[in-house]
Amino acid sequence: MELQKLFYDGKIQEATSGNVFQTINPATGEVICNVQEASEKDMELVIKSAKAGFSKWSSMAPVERGRILQRAASILRSRNDELAALEVLDTGKPISEAMVVDVASGADAIEYYAGIAAAIHGAYHDLGSSFAYVRRQPLGICAGLGAWNYPLQIACWKSAPALACGNAMIFKPSELTPLTAIKLAEIYTEAGLPNGVFNVVQGSSKVGQMLVSDSSIAKISLTGAVGTGKKVMAAAAETLKHVTLELGGKSPIIIFPDANIEEAVNGAILGNFYTQGEVCSNGTRVFVHRSIKDAFLKLLIEKTKRLKIGDPMNEETHIGALISKEHLNKVLSYIESGKRDGSTLCFGGNRYHPKDPATTNGFFVEPTIFDVSSDDDRIACEEIFGPVMTVLTFDQEDEVIQRANNSAFGLAAGVFTSDIKRAHRVVNELNAGVCWINNYNITPVEVPFGGFKQSGIGRENGWAAVHHYTQMKTVYVEMDKIDYPYPG
Image: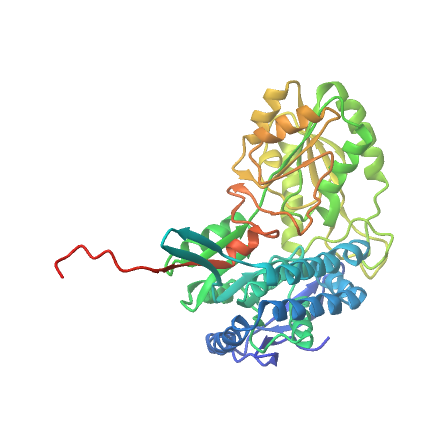
């Protein structure tokens, strides 16, 4: 694959830093290609391009913005297979997932906000002899900082509402997965997006820091780790930027004794092993009622044994490779920690070496299940971001709610029960931004996504995102004489 560059002013551009970094195929450990890193000079040119693009785009009729976004969604869908394969090459996730989720969900987001673009509106206030109205206006240039688990989807989730609201965007993908963002930029341009409205810069965290510190940037939207979110928020405060943070989690799934056990097992597997566990909302603390725990674990292990690990490009693969060797070692260290702390290893727990010579050096870990006796064990309270499930036992509803909420995180939660009253009662008490009843990790673009506590600030998706990418301007219109209180 050829050298990857930057994208701004509507075309691929050479970086001036002279620095390149490598992107690695997680399934093989081999280099895919080199990528140019943006310099401060590049950033000045990108921001200049974004300012020009914003001027044109923000003055365009919203219905026309919607038409362009709709065309982009159609092009994205037409290239689903090609982009899914590129995403698999860069992330290590199974092609069976990328073919039906990653590209399609990104297209769904663009399509949804294409429809919203012309419906964004303010408000009118009758004040008797006078009136006021409120306009919703774009913020300006927004910066999107992407994560490496769903690179294309996240780029769409951030850019679609930003562009629909009339903003320009500079997007920095994770340096671990830099390949598909530029493809999205090319698609937007092909669809008719004016030059400079969507731009891509590549590089490490220092490139992200340039965006966060630049006074020309009106908003930062980050998907990433809690520690990164804290640094971004602190730096953004220097220029009082708008900030949206979608961060990590250690989410609970609560399984009551009246739950359909097979459905609960299916939900727990999806909420732990999908995308080899690299999902921020994963329900990695699985609380199972004591009366059904043995039956639950038995079926859970039976089903987990059927999961196939290996070459992500094989359509029969269920568990792909972790993103990097560093992350592989982190996940393995947590597994060793679980063993040392006295948790019972029920299944998995090892690095996996596929028989295929092409992937034998990839970063694979077996789906792993621990029966954990203490909520305080590291594997039960720290985010691992890998295929490691912790199963915990509970007896009473009030008890499990308290334990589920006993976390610095609050991104997501799931409840499995056939008692719908209990389901709503428990969900109402859970401190989590996204909750599922008898399902897990379903994220339609129509509904807001985001967390409580240290899992984030603000929301992605739904109408909520419109509020995060616009600002309100109040206009008072006097229709009578001024009530002048001073001598004439």
